[in-house]
Length: 385
Image (cartoon, rainbow, N blue to C red; front, side, top):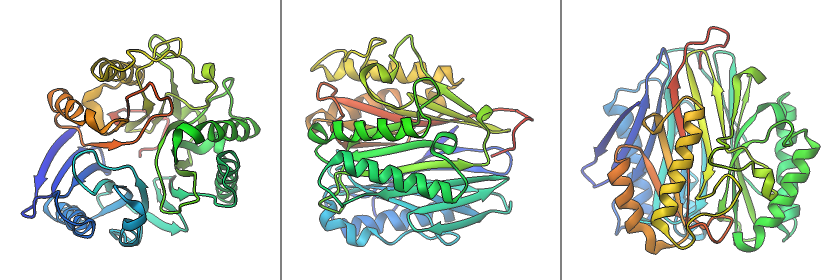
């Protein structure tokens, strides 16, 4: 993994990672506009910085695959966040109210791929962006909501049924093809349990259980621009993969099975290709192998344990923190920002990271972290990425 930073004349910083391999180079960007300006100005700074980044690195065949904007006040900012950075006709855009922890109104996480002139087919179909390459279909779906009720259980059920139906129309299934979800819950302390119960019910119906497997996920506080939306889902699915390409990460020395405390997600999932392995680490917190919260009210020790747990999951996937391409740190309390930033600058200064204010599903957890990693493989049984 290579890392770098670019600063524009306007004061915008692009912190990036790049994984280079064969004919597909992967870039993760975290773009931080200058604080103290309006949200509209900050959005324009992000857009211009992304375009300038592609120009300066001569990414003539780059495809922006996924973008997430972290907004401080989505009700007032959503209108001008709708435009997308348009390389090759479309992209997946996720917009969520999770205020950036350090004075900004907006931050952006952008994932793009430079395919070196390989044939790539892209299609934007409603809320889903499809990228087809080398026999695989990568489907990023953003902003799935339901407003038919004010009940988080019924909203989550409807969202998953809609998503399962969408996959079915592509001859895919939730069990075989969905790799990663993000579940953003408004007022998580009150609405999380309804979301969990609905997810458990739909998963069981779709063949997902502790006897088979679940899906890597983050369930966290977040709001869409629609006031009556209690749950908002982003998801990533892959067509053309086989079960042999998937590894479900446990790290039982450090973490308990999630079903021990009534939730249904994988701690992490790795996807093998011929030339690389993608590792998706779910939202991870300060927990032990019996499912207990460790170090109540101690942000320093909780952070240390969280990264210890992530390290155990990465090791199980044949990776380490040196292979991490992007990271999101969620804080419950804005007052912990100074400590977290000092910790990250000391231990992981190069990794593109977003720090957002977003309470975790259990009030005792002060911090949660998710990340993605990429490592080189040589597996002739599978097609390259």
